[in-house]
Length: 111
Image 1 (cartoon, one colour):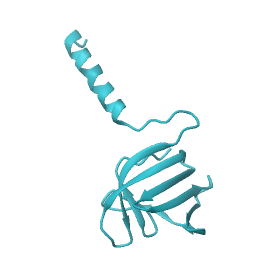
Image 2 (tube, helix red, strand yellow):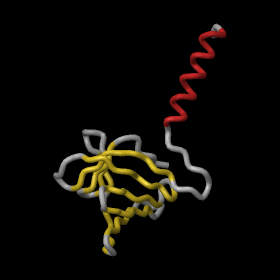
Image 3 (cartoon, one colour):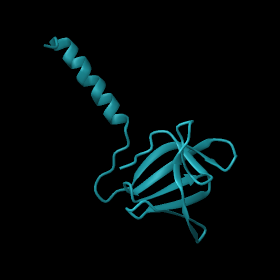
């Protein structure tokens, strides 16, 4: 049995951890702070805007807005400036998720 004082401490820790995670209400986009890299460029602060978890999201990198869509069967399409192409998703050794040369790292919501 957990002593009452310890139980309160555990509960407080869980609330702090949970409140730090991005949360979206139904019909609202989720904004997640990340670090992104384009090609061999430097890592920079960016945001992931999740419209539909696991299916539709954007990376907002400076003035750039890169849109991604997952078709539910494994294919991911990346669109920027009206040009769209299928990309390959893969995890790298540095724990970043990359779609060809566009990479993100941090608390990436997957599904």
